[in-house]
Image 1 (spheres, one colour):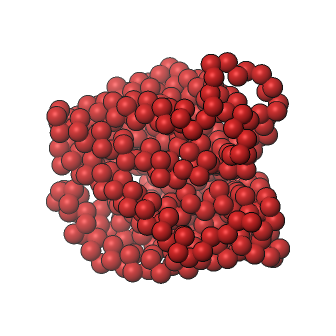
Image 2 (cartoon, helix red, strand yellow):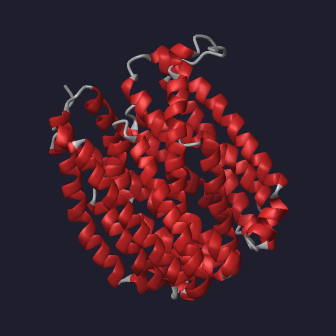
Length: 423
């Protein structure tokens, strides 16, 4: 019987929240130092490269992260099985990420000049290619730790170490260009990914050659699930980051910088949700698998109520002090305050609807999630292509916020329809 009470959830959440806030603080300082050190255009170029990295990594991972969490949570008592599964995943993602990296390097001229209308990007894309392999492996290791109910270790590798090492390197060698800034990020990711492999190796029984009993490892089923989730994850990425690519094509690197600053600050608001997802995702998977639906619903209601209570005052605070917040990055970023206020509206709905997306994925309703994601991403693309050339960065903010809100509300409807009604 799996159950989790308010005190247990609060204790686990508090520790993870401390780590997540520490990670957020380090990320904030890292980007703060870069934004102040670089010109607005160079910081915009760096942000554009990171957005390209997000898309290349998404194609390399192919939605495997939530599938890893789900399968490792269910079979975490079977060390032999999950150890074999881990080896296959590492090899599979290496091949995928290497192919994506080769495409990025081969088409760097087309991507930078023709596709994005940002010729300056061409020198950064080879670094993006290298980061694609490293970030894919890092995401795999963090997901494995999350599925093994090691949320603290998982969270440390999803931001804390990267930005901590990044800050140390940045302070010792301040960058002057977007390329130099991306190289600093590259070195930090190398260190963090190497450490993540050492930690995972301690959790699993891994030998040099476990390429046997392929089917019994469950890898085929995991890949089938991940392919469904890939569409969903790519669609979610489009809804959140596609604006940056269109701003590169129809606006300027300075507009990308303004939007990126506002987006990074607004994403900080979602950290409580990320923390609770880290704790509850494996619990949802196991509860639903064992048909403990009452406990499932109680856990969902507890997390949603706490998120609403936290999100409302937090969002009001950010909107009211938006100018003061973005001014930390420098007076040149003050125009991003209005962008931040718009994006916060979408984040309020994101938190107030609770962990609905995680619930759909962890209970095997990934096809519903995929359909919702595809529909919302297509609408996002259409409206962004229509409005960004006319109204620029403000249009990008409004489309992103409305898209996020609608996506979460639709997901909430399907949670009620296919999960809560069974309780």
